[in-house]
Amino acid sequence: MRGPLLAAAGGAMGGAGGPLARTIRAKLTAALQPTHLEVRDDSPRHGGPPGAETHFGVLVVSGRFAGLPPLQRHRLVHEALRAELAGPLHALQVIARTPEQWQSDPHLPSAPPCLGGSKREKRREDGGEAPGQQ
Amino acid sequence: MRAAVRTGWRIGAAAAAALRGRAGRPLSQAAGEGGSAEGGGGGGGGSGSREAVERLVREHPVVVFMKGSPAQPLCGFSNAVVQILRLHGVEDYRAHDVLQDPDLRQGIKDYSNWPTIPQVYLNGEFVGGCDILLQMHQNGDLVEELKKLGIRSALLDAEKDQEKK
Image (cartoon, rainbow over all chains, first blue to last red; front, side, top):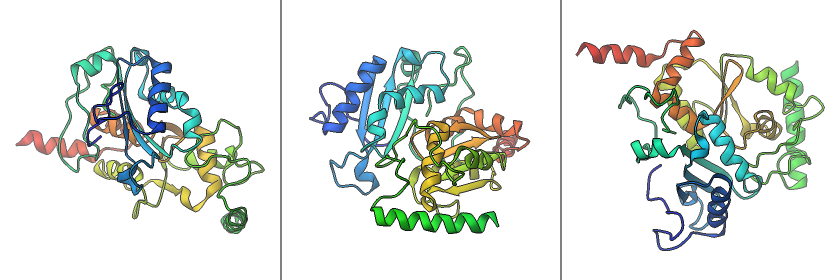
């Protein structure tokens, strides 16, 4: 995901974001007890005015994801935000990593897929779990 | 004939939706990309019914539900899926534009219990959306999954060329 991400409590961008951002943060915190959480309002990049709060990206680092394939991790996130996804939340990008994965690679993947470029390293030996590149 | 019936019905549904001032059938309460856990989003054999969706996901090893078309995606996330498949040399697949069919748009979300578009199905099985496909692309899983479908990823040949250098 490109662009700075709003940190969790404290709001590195000088604010906790709009009401939906706060709701998302609160629900993900309650559901997944993340060790690290970032919530980003992408709405302006999708044609919405600032503060539209329709498109979000979330980075969730949680031990709850251990042993779960990406699909199941995303489903946990969706479950936590079921009401929002049924309502104003139009799109949701998800990066879901275990604390170990985040620690060994605390970087976000670049958002657009590489066109013919970087070959990522081979799958890591962390119990067969694919790295948390989303 | 089925196509003609579906087209006619789709227009009827769209017109009815316009009258109601909202896309989708009454049971599809989602305001945006809301996922609904209610079963049978399409009901009555419509294009969004489980049966109809089941037929679509099985009609080809690679099936994508997206916004717009591969030639003209209408959403960045849908475009990402198209680009990733293109990188792997996968150009022959079934793509369904959910913007053309509100019932399918809701039905596919009910079917997979997944709230957003795009959705990628390999061998009739839901594998995820744009984020997951990107991850699979980056960690090599997609090459493996395509191989299981008898599709050789173009990236394997690209890698071979690289190794020669």
